[in-house]
Image (cartoon, rainbow, N blue to C red; front, side):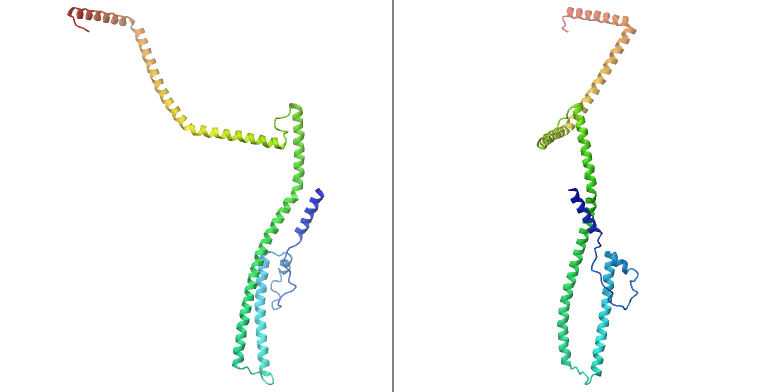
Length: 279
């Protein structure tokens, strides 16, 4: 398995380092401007980029336009001179010009259809090129990740071995922990049980959160009532202390007042009995 992975990675690296480029042109289209783009032509061919390819396309389009104009000019001049210096000279009538113009219109229509087809083909090729570029970048990224996987896998295997050895030592020293050596089915069942318990706790927590505002209001009301009771207690304690202070300061005067009150009450009861007046 390791050899297979190594072979795959080496093959991907080999393919990755091969340059991907459009078919290189064997030579310039025209030699009318040999010094143009001479400085960076070799670099753009060896290391093509979207910008360099776009510049090449514009350059060759310009050259093709100039070449077509030169070709039409030279051919027209040649035909005109041959018609003049020929023996006998070529004489063209108006009907022939009309016929040629009709053929020219048909040829232009066919040429326009071909240009439209070429334009759509170019657009399709551009879209396909962009898609291939994205796929190529994705393959490069996946290749980089795949190159890192073997070392990561080896590190994980070593970590698993260390954890297993540690688990075995802890099991020998202090007994096996509950749920650490369960099979897959039992582990899944235990996870389901824990999840159900967690859902039940969540429901209880939600109900407690809903009841919290009512309990908070009741707590505030109880605190207000408690403050009123504390106030009454303080007033009662203060009155009792004041009575004790007065009793300590003048206890005989209080007894005299009590005796005088009893005597006045007795006098009042006697007078009411004599007069026959009910209380």
